[in-house]
Length: 386
Image (cartoon, rainbow, N blue to C red):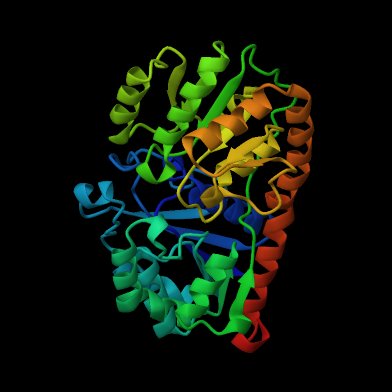
């Protein structure tokens, strides 16, 4: 099978989080299954910089062909708007070389250009939006998303051979945009989850957050909750792991105002073993986001045996009371949940062990074979037999 993966950002652009992680895992799994894989992406490294030109054409995994198209505007790239120069021309010239296309995004020109080229060439494509599709108010940019769907996204959804979802909300969003129910299928994101081994817990009660420092993540609420925790547990620590952002200065100011700046550490972006060790060493992982399609960072924490405290908007299926606590998302509610776990190490340990089992269902070695088989069926049969 000759497979084209179209994604707005790709390794080493891990600052863009879960979609990049899932794309890497999918590409690696397809290669291991003996397929030929090409990745079409942009040169975005993060919201402020580009992938250096001296990065090898095949950064990872070995065997994939990675074709990068420069974003036309650094300013628009900073607003998460990709404008890949040369992509449409390349697609016109090469799209017929592929048996199937996997779109790893909906709200981008990469997705639109790739879907239209596939449609013209008669090449089937599978759409996987990783929880980003719903245009609900708590997800932000509702108006812009609805306009995009009306102008471009709806057609992309309706012409897809298969649409993959990770939550009931995403499934419903596909159906609202006119997808045929029989072509809407569940698929967990394939994750290369950490296995840090026997990493000792930090000597003091440590809460860790992993993700972008963006207002939708409500890190300010977490800092407020942590201030209440610190009033009762003076040795507690909060580690914020994520790439620098404009919102970071406001969060630092808030920590100073609440008198906890000496206990709040901004660790920047961590990857690989360093990230796994940070998650495994913490006593609790916390995410109080207003809305998440699916919190990949929370799954990573569970894989490290760390229990989680989540808001309703960030909740994972099957977590509450089993591998962590889903609180009400307020400062008092989050503080109570954090204290409940920090004060009861035995309960936290039990929840953490259960979390490892829950996270196992997201491991790439389990999910990728299912995804690759689906892509094989789409590539070798008619839409009705996919």
